[in-house]
Length: 359
Image (cartoon, rainbow, N blue to C red; front, side, top):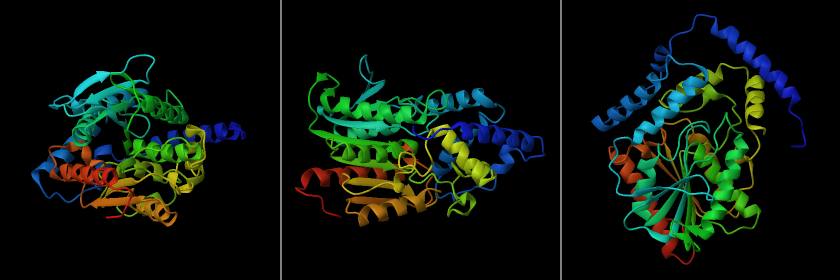
């Protein structure tokens, strides 16, 4: 990269020192901090989801540093432990990208979907998101390739981006049974994976490479410029992201910005990090889902408004009182199943129409 990062190293060291000093002060427990974040409970299923999220957090409350991340990763993977899947799971083989095929009984080899999981670019895996990939394969009749892209901090943020690009190009020519061209191709992702999804379709356009039939982004992060974190609408109703963002908001903005730039080797205003900052014209039909109760909702609306103004056929669907990426809790949540039905209707419209028309 043309500009250096030596000054960021210094700022990062200062930030670390500042955080260590703060930790010496009396702080409320993590459980106490989380009590200020709540979501109206409208069903027993929703309460079960909230309990699951809380249990994931509690599992790592007494662990710090690298061990904490390992515990969180393991806890996320455990979400699929008791799932009953209709799809076959097949790990990829070298020299293919690292990941797994998720193949429903009705899936056809030439229909393919690249899935990019979420997890704040530091956690999550194909296993943790099998509830989504299994449902997408059954819904679309496509063979889903769930990419196991490189995660931070072991790897750089942009290493994960490169993995996504390479996987898409590979998937155009390779199916679960070997070499063959795809005649239906979708890119989908959630949260951090939704960010990579939106960044990937912009890169494909810029490189004049074949665009997918459509793109699906579930609760994506579209703007990581980190301004006025606590002033974001839905700050106190986002039970999944709120407490984490609350900690970040306590860091002085210049240090927070510098820390993000240091970690990602790109400024937060770079479209690789914040897709809303880039050119949003000429993109494929895109569907975005977001909860009306989550922190990311306002930025998603801004992304959609800008993309539509630049001529991109993008649609946004919202659900009230849902957690971030509630799709993970299918079939428990009826709202998750409704969201998948909406995805199916969107893709049917794209496939059956000679040209895209807004519903």
